[in-house]
Length: 293
Image (cartoon, rainbow, N blue to C red; front, side):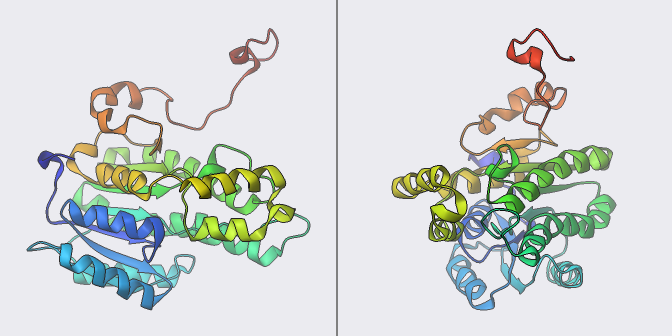
């Protein structure tokens, strides 16, 4: 990222920031000049991240932390209120908090755990967006970055809460982007790749009996290879939050496969078409002579 992309004194809220990708995103944002509010459910983990990031802050920057369960609207309201008390404004919201949820066949899993995963992954993305919109609209700009995952574009048998919620996050991202486009607010989703994080550990521990032999074997190989570097998605997130990243909205962007560094060159083509969005594929697009357009 070059100097023109650095936007010092920008203020960002990152959910699920106590470890893994959330912590990597926080570091990437601090490195390009953001002050950050970090939230998660574990205070001790948040304190460790803050201690690690504080030395990287330059003059005018700071790292704040707050315990919050993003699936609880009251706690989210308190988080936003605290953030607005400690920061002069809020420029960027990064919705990173997420879980796999229960693993196994739908009829066998614990229903309350399935619903809880939907509440964290989907409602825990939607409600923070809702909570920051009045502030963003009053200022005429804002960036929202939602973390997606493999479940958004591929079926994931036996991990249905995760797959359903992540697909919903992407469609919500596309929908909200159109709703707030005239307010100067950009909303995008990130597909971070297969990450070797706590969630990967949980998936491997569940075993092939719960997540399926083929998928488990694939994830074992990803884990052995080290997975996608956290820095890839963190760098994309920092780019979208920066001056240079403000060119596209309503997109699902892969940190691994898409040329996001060069999006400024292609922004008109991207924004005026359905590229990097969820869509229905018709038989004719697959060379079949039957079916609708």
